[in-house]
Image (cartoon, rainbow, N blue to C red):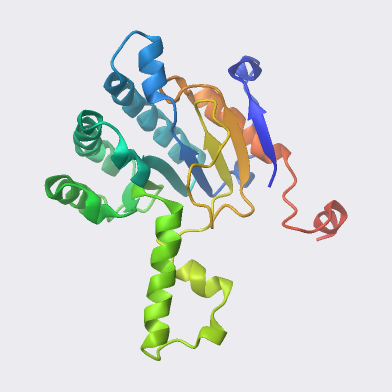
Length: 259
């Protein structure tokens, strides 16, 4: 798993040519920097979240056009519940309102909406509206836009272990037969492949409790660009950076070349 920090200045050159046969199947993004973007423009933090919705739209469109199969966005963490109530309430309203507004375009572009996380913590009305939008896009067969809402990886792993322990207690599962695959299938992401590429905007170099189990061999890229300023061009360059790397999965470079 190779980590590289990338500054916006590195993306001022001519756009690279992407190998469309090697587009990452699953890209995960930690969308960071909304509040700081707003503050740097003399606005309230919530204005940054509003602007960030436009970035979600353009990156989703770009991912779909490039043939990405799954785009997972870290939308709201379990830790975010500890933010000031006014900001949390505004975020919940913004998230579901934006999803409802974008649903017709998602359907038009054959994008299916999904969600992972402790959704039971969401306000009942917000959860119902989210479920309705997911149902409306359920027939789409293109990109899966997977929102991590009220999500934390430690919560997910804990819940997976609880489910497996319950099955073992019932006699339906032999603990000695538990494998990595067994645990993977107990995760909320069981239906999708592990991320090939994880991008974090906003300048911080940490994973923040996001998909910890799934990113064991994911390529990581960090950029100082705040999420509202994240462009299609920078997204494409991150994919180009992914394509320049050799993914060895514990093998040697020679073994990869010979395979």
